[in-house]
Length: 166
Length: 169
Image (cartoon, rainbow over all chains, first blue to last red; front, side):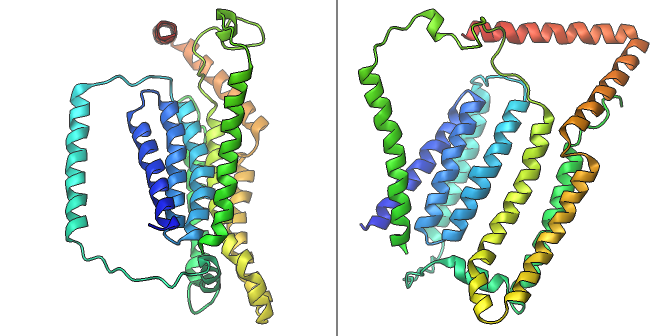
């Protein structure tokens, strides 16, 4: 049990507990704030798994961006507290149980190719190097910008207030 | 590699601890004399009316959407910023700068598009909204009976929401 294990367990606990709050809370605003901690916990998990750039991206994009979008989404929807519906709960429970069984099956039967990592310094240097070298990922890097442009124009078009009169 | 992030973790824990300790100390020191006046939501001395959650303007959402795209762009610029010195030392500074310039320029086109279309223009879109609302009202007046029923329907819906919220509190 090293410090890394303890950190991983702590972040996993934050993620799972806050995810439970997200799923179970009656008020959608509280759920949204719970999701904030879930994203944060996932960022911690990435870090403890040695993916520091992914962690930074997770915090920057999910905690910083997606959460803001989600909160605005929540505030745009009419206020309504969800009531407890037994039939719906049962359906969710069944689906959840099926997914759990599937995941456990995979966990038990998959061949995990584990390998001792030689403690990488930081992944960001290597990512930067590969992203900007022509023989490696330069073209995908530039294409990402076209993809983002398409997403930007698409989002702006869909979110634009159209005429109220049909 | 964990060593670098131990600092971050300590910073994080001290941050949480600072808030927690201050709240505990505050709750121990301050007198607790709640009354209904104090417990009501503060709205500049007025009695709060209706639900505290109002529907936000859709434009906030549009801005948030646009923000996320540029947020992702920034995430992609991190590795570039981190590796730039290394490339520069290898004599590739100009090339790498040009590469990222292409990346940013393509997204800059998006910004120009948004600007030209008025998605970033708060006042202008308010004006467009006002005109749309005016046109809407004229159309409503043309078919008055349909409009009346729609209005009374929305009115009852609002009353119900208010009643439900009041019941909840």
